Image (cartoon, rainbow, N blue to C red; front, side, top):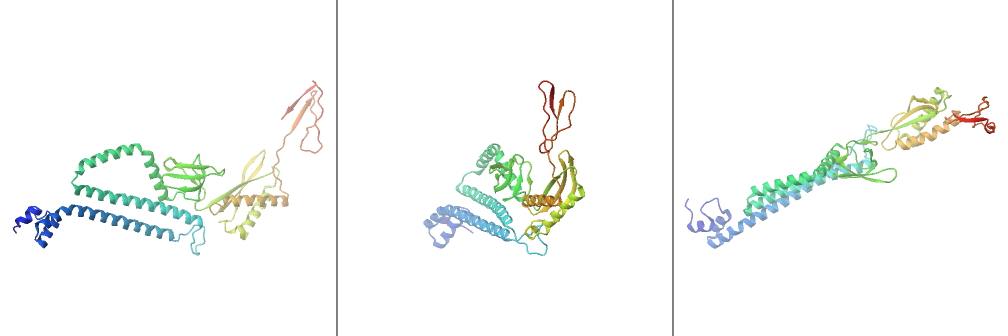
Length: 351
């Protein structure tokens, strides 16, 4: 179909060019109106691109927020609860889950937003008439330079992302990172903040963490090496320790903190300082230290009642006088006194 000469003059020779211009010309029949529409076509396309990018970014943020809200509210069972009970997350679990979900949601939201607006920006530059090939090449060179200069930062972010995805630790956990150990107070993609038992705050970049020991994940164990005197009857001491631990296992105040019945594994070491008997108790996370302190107090009271002696550090001192060795003197015996040594007639030796 032949084109109108006025339409060609206003909108161009090809039908594929100036869709808005040709539409306005067909409706109005005015060449001036068609030329105005042709001049406004490019700004309108840019505005449309920006509006679509804003809608896409907003929709993505709302979608990520909805998914994150569902993940936070979803109940999650715990390995140390009864199977028939309704899984009710503890405060520590809720804080940990919220922190993990919020961090991941922030990462996804930021990545999606940057990607959407980057694509929109490239399309707008193409509409303006800028050649994108040199621009993309220059951006690639700049990206390489920045990447080389920020390798440690990128490493920290990647390590933090995998740490969150694998749920290696979270807020409230007690962890050991080597030089730094303590309770996790805050976690981000780049750095982890710990507070040790002395109150010192440690900031550890995630990329520098080569190993992590989590002392509060799933379940914990209280380990006690109870020392008794060398002449103690081992079966009697073992029975006292086991009965004391079983009493704590049946105590309603402590029953919810102990997962399994305590076990006495037996003699762990024999030395000059006494005999060590090992007691182990499986506990809920972060309760192993409280359980161990209570067990020590109860075992000491039970030992006193049963007459089981604790090891006592002893030292024997002998003196050589005139080539003769007097009877050994035990300084722990009340009223004992070492014999006098005449000046110059003998030497004293400590053993």
